[in-house]
Image 1 (cartoon, rainbow, N blue to C red):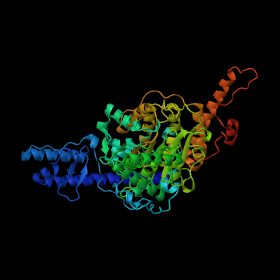
Image 2 (cartoon, rainbow, N blue to C red; image 1 turned 180 degrees about the vertical axis):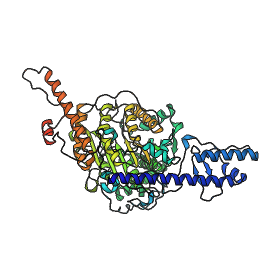
Image 3 (spheres, rainbow, N blue to C red; image 1 turned 60 degrees about the vertical axis):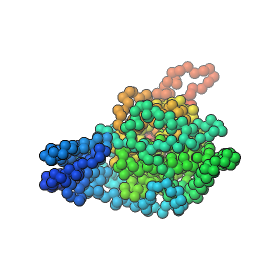
Image 4 (cartoon, helix red, strand yellow; image 1 turned 90 degrees about the horizontal axis):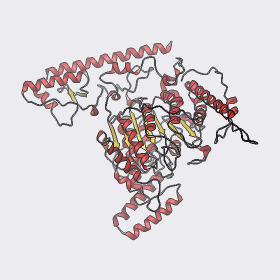
Length: 636
């Protein structure tokens, strides 16, 4: 009953704000009709790149609105009549749908604050987490190496999710409708027009961060799989498919020490930047003997690290890579772009706070997520990081495992701790610590061969219901393509259409800020280039693949059920989704037993009751989790 009352108040509040917006638009139009034709000509004239319509030119508080709205169409028609009357012959600029920018009258009327418990519009500046001091985005590497000030006490799940977890409404049992409200999002778009989400646009503004200078990081001494062609061939593939002309380039720069110190230790940042300066000075001298000695010394340093190679340009490329991720994410967070992609290297998700690891120097995605959390004007409160690289994103997990503002999800090969990085860091029982318990999700495959059907099943069966409950404002994808078919290290079977399908599912969550995609691994350059192009197409709004998805394997259902078993206790509304995953696995396992029993058994041998690679007992698992509904909380 309380929920229905709260819902009615929220609906009335939304109708009031819609009426108030319409009233203000009408006031602006009435005032605009009184303005002189000379003022209208001056304000509406400009460069061809000006794609907005100014309402009420004589008002110092005037604003830009979309010409596709009623107010924009009326203003454009009036400007055209004024031009005809004055004989100027100039036409009102027409907005390109791909460049559409729609801003509300008030900054505090944010579209991402549609929580039922908060009928009034909330200002982003009143977030529970105060942003850090405003930092510049320049290349100056001589910033002080002081770590960022300690963050304020972080609230738990209930504080972050508002009253959503207190919703007593029952779920219909279908995980595709998990977390949905009685009134759909389409009603919100109708009421809020013309201030609806930019996702309503047919064409999406997408930014691309890329710099060919990142190709200078290479290992000439051996045929290392992390080579420059990973990004150069991907960039060429974007051009071949005609995608470069549809995206907007983000100017390259180098990350500052302040940005890096938010997630890395200050002494590590200082040491690497000093190394980069020394290498740059030696390269400028162009002394071949000294450069040869430098390369030898860098090789010795890299041998002491964990699966990393270095040359004289490595640190500079890592700074470019980290800044590319930061700019792609922050320009989505502040509304410059609806979505963005960062074609960067070296990768970053293995880098720890104190050391380089696994081809990674700086943790690009972690640095970018921290920058979005501390954005000077529009800090994010809930960020979802999805890592589909075939290797576990150990560095990103360790940096945010205690922070409920970041929900980290990694889908990777685990092989019972034998796949890189070795150990139990990527095990399903690693769900976070402290206030971040339940905000760390690991889906680990036991063995190779996982394909489109396995990944789609993991998303649909458990991950998407969790993401809907979390309601992320911003989604960052650690897009490693070493799980693609033909990769020499991954051994999985994902296709470009499979990656695009996963990204479409994340875009369908409609985060209020947008989606940013950052390149991680992937060592078959052809697979990487085609998969990356498919993802950029999805960010631009390309049609989703409509072909059938293969059935998920038994191993995939086992892995998802195991993950759900550990994560669901921290999210009571995931009880039904966890039970569905458990039942789906048990049905598949019984079918496997029946198939194995029907096959002839070798003389003197024993029947294989479990697929190879399983390190646990199905009967024990079934005994530990009863099938009957234990009366847990309803929900997804």
